[in-house]
Length: 176
Image (cartoon, rainbow, N blue to C red; front, side, top):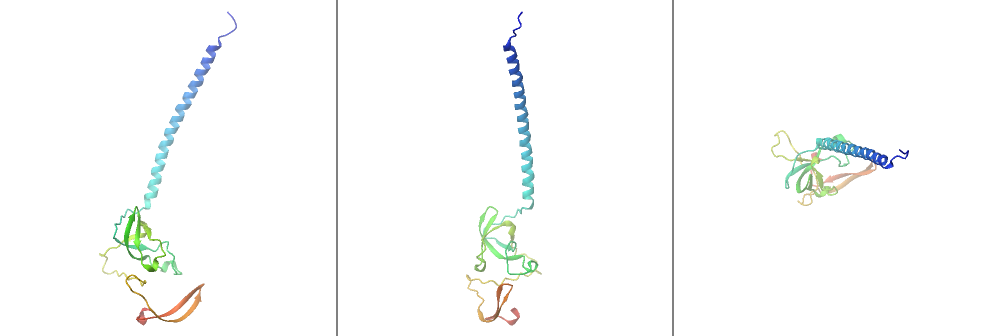
């Protein structure tokens, strides 16, 4: 017997141990990957529920008449609480997903004409008899309705804006 041991047996044993460790790491990584996929699916579902929590499921069609909300529209009114909640009644011309293109009057053409369904409310002719919806005094150029000025009576500067006192043609004194 000699003291020289067979080195091939030792090297193959080490290689087998390293291969077994590598195989254990691969199995652990696969389990971790599956766990992460499951957690990602749960998170996506939670996010989807949260996003859709306040979504309106109202679907409007082309040629429907809708009320447009005043939300995100800046006006000259000083107090937010005194401004109207609905801008006016408009007709839907084009539908793109949950967004709607409205036929706006000329006096508010500076607004973008695409609106989310959250800003719209369907017009109903079956409203309660006690409810009265007053039409707004907007200048409608298409129908040839104009408010004509008879005379400018006075003007003043108020909070960095110029205000005019105007006398209208064919307007009763009570309507001013």
